[in-house]
Image: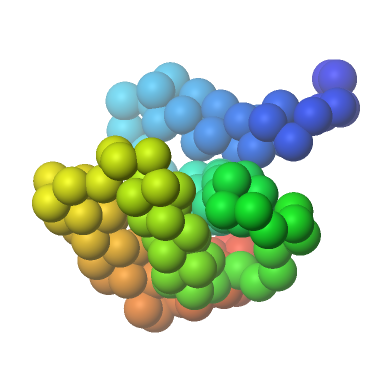
Length: 125
């Protein structure tokens, strides 16, 4: 197995793992569901961190590592930056605003009981 040499490769491995298991199996064992959710959730976390870092630079800031594992907090920091990038480029409209809001609501609904993924990770042991 090749170790990832780029951030994108690293993040994509989590998505590919989750997808491969979901696509190969017609029926999942109950014991497999939480580990798959954990892996897919980690992919989302890594992507939010990457996009948040990029949007900081696009807004004139410095690229800094984004800390934390709470998807809702990561999203809230991300959405403000991405809205500013879109507004600066005349790409922000009500449809985009509604879409971002809906994504935020979905993230909030999925992270309320496990804000840092520890509940998912415990099933990997």
